[in-house]
Image (tube, rainbow, N blue to C red; front, side, top):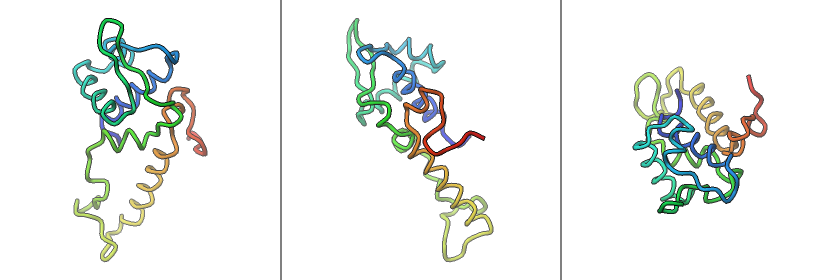
Amino acid sequence: MLLSKTTGYGIRSLAFLARQPKSRLCGLQELAEGEKVPPVFLRKILGELRRHRLVTSLKGIHGGYALAKPADEITLWDVFTILDSDPYWDRCVLTYAACSTDSPCVFCPMWQRQRQEFFSTLKNTTIADIARGGSPAGVEPR
């Protein structure tokens, strides 16, 4: 798995919210059950997404969560950079040290290309794409 469980849950939750009518707020329990995410974990994820202004929330009996901006303006890269705390994307796959252009290992050029392709996909895929279940712009399914 390339994305952390936290990032995957965040993306799925945002897509769930994107599929709701514009004025509808979703409660934590409904969202957790709809995406099969542990509610305690989801509360922390949504708190972080709210702090970065990807979701809004309203407390109270008629409260819940909604997207803070249109789903086609939220990229997977946005979610990844907020929720994925893996600092090793720039690490060598053999030595776990930072990749070096001065003395690259045999995997370095291939890993750099793969990483850039993956990051490009995240930057070009929106929550709207995920909510629709389609492919991101310019990326054909394999």
